[in-house]
Image 1 (tube, one colour):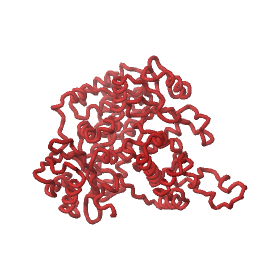
Image 2 (cartoon, helix red, strand yellow; image 1 turned 90 degrees about the horizontal axis):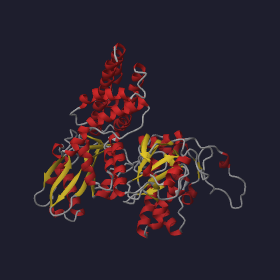
Image 3 (cartoon, helix red, strand yellow; image 1 turned 90 degrees about the vertical axis):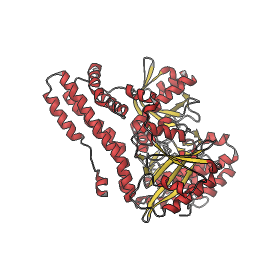
Image 4 (cartoon, one colour; image 1 turned 60 degrees about the horizontal axis):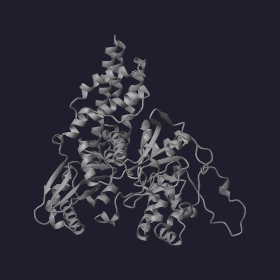
Amino acid sequence: MMQSIRRGAATLRTPTITAAAQEELEAAGSEAERIESVAALIHGAFTDYYGRFRQIAGLAEAAFEARDWPASLALSQERLGIYGATVDTLVPVILLHCPDVQGRDVFWSAVEDKYLPLIEGLYHADLAYAFLNSVRRQVHADMWRASTYSSARARDEDKAAHPVVTRLFAVEGSLAAAHLSPVLTLPGFSRHWRDLDGDAAAVAARIREEVPQADRIRAIEMADAGFYRNRGAYLVGRLLIEGGEPVPAGIALLNEPDGIHVDAVILGSDDLQYVFSSTLANFHVTSEHYHEMASFLFELMPDRPHGLQYSTIGYNHIGKIAVVRQIEEELRESGERLDHAVGPRGTVAIGFSAPSLDYVAKVIRDHPTAGYKWGKFPGVPSVLQKYSRVHEINRAGSMLDNVIYYNVVLPADYFTDDLRHEILKYAGENVIQTGAGLLFRHLIVQIKMTPFPVFMTEAGEEKADTALRNLGQCIKNNAAANIFNKDLDGRNYGVSKILKVYLFDYDAIEDLTDVKVRTNQDRFDGEEDIPDWFFEEGVIFLPEELETHLRIEERSLRRIFREAHGELLTVAYWTDMQARLEKGQVPRITPYREACRLHPES
């Protein structure tokens, strides 16, 4: 069975669809026939793409039940790539048979008129309309715009039309195993449980222990879907408390050789937010109602922007639209303007935000500033490739995901005059003033973090201690994902509201397995000759200098860091990790606190 999952039980039919469309276009005797054929081609390709996209969630569930972890990872990679691959396949066909359509708005308006009836009434009509605009933009070399689809807006306004994406489990009396058993079996796994009754009792006991109002829980509301990622499955919902605020909750499941079992109980918005963080791979979710699911997740995790909830469940293109709309709405409501982001100015990127904004945007400079450390600048495309790579790999819970826009226009009055002048002066090859707007050839958007050095100057002793420990864990997680930040400067790391630390600058990332780990600690006092490693090419890393690079200068803070992560200062740690990665081993990364696990020692 799992061989079919690896290969794809239903591969994309785009080549067949485009071949048929080419025959129609060749036979077209008029402009009207060409327009109808192009609309049908785009609709057919989208239907094929979306069918496979939705099927992947079911295949991810099957991979979890069959314990086929390579299939699970392959499905994640496939889902990331099939949208762009489908669009790219259509472009040369359209250009071949309609070579005069670039720049012709009348042609595309006519295509849209034929396309809209084909998607009218579909739940996913907004995604289908965004797909049309993606094709048009690629063919037309057009600007990116947030797609607007009228029936999608009507559905948003008609609350009664919203599908229900949750199930309610009543709780009578004290919370017990009997209340949790139907929650745990909600996905209807065919794979057997190791000890369902024991897990149900353990989850109920953990909730009673951790939730002060546990005696007033009257219902458990769960998303009517399974959430799948890598080796794990998750059940997500909230505890409804009489006379109190709901408590967000998640249940992490693993499938071991002896059966499925509960590994962790995740309680509270902060801990759940970390599991759903955009620093981790996106979930496969078995519900097709993405608007309602994103809204439910936002209710559980209100500190995560609504737009990112879409990306969390794999709808990156809807997420991109939601992020832009949120930025526009917040700037309008606050009256604020975009200005330089908090923290030191970047040598490679110009970062900007507004005080109330949940995001930071970046544009890559045409040339780095004088503080650039790495010799010849490889160019803007090389830097963008690194940011794109982070979007596509296992981010190990320690690297921010990026939303990257190409050819997007923002109104010039969004920006302070100083910021606008700096962008046009130092990123002028990629940003152009066009009328009342700035056209960005590329724009990178990330969720806002407090730069690590800024946080440390403002934090109290306890928070500084926590952030420092989390910085070390961030570096370890990245190493486990074969990521090495050769610019190990604390300014490249950010602290979230829940004190997790993340890498957010990617112009200096390299594969850890390509790094040459060396040391000066084997040299005798008084040796003044140049060390041998000085003449080696490539990236050289001296672990004993890590604290200096991270700008951990106070003795008390260095002591905390060494107590928690002293091994990071040794050659042995880094060479051992390289050896494990080269053997194909994947070190375990737990996407929730050890304290959330039912059996932390396992």
